[in-house]
Image (cartoon, rainbow, N blue to C red; front, side, top):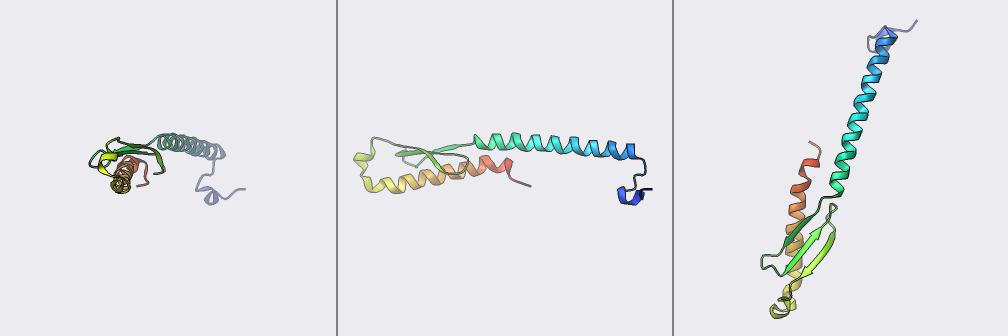
Length: 107
């Protein structure tokens, strides 16, 4: 005969099967929720500009640059400002992205 203590104190096989079914259903529900969260994360992106509006960037869920727009006024301002403007816009977009991803981070 099976020792009930080895089965978490459950002596009745029907009760054991019911608990296992409940655990399976809970696991499937959690897996579906994780899949929904993963799909949502994959669509997150953030767009930001440098303080002067010279450069606008968009980053994807992974923080990588997806698009870069340079205002025509950059020619008048000089190209030396372009590098710092790109970096400022990229930093701002990544900061926004971090905030948007906060709900998906483990607690």
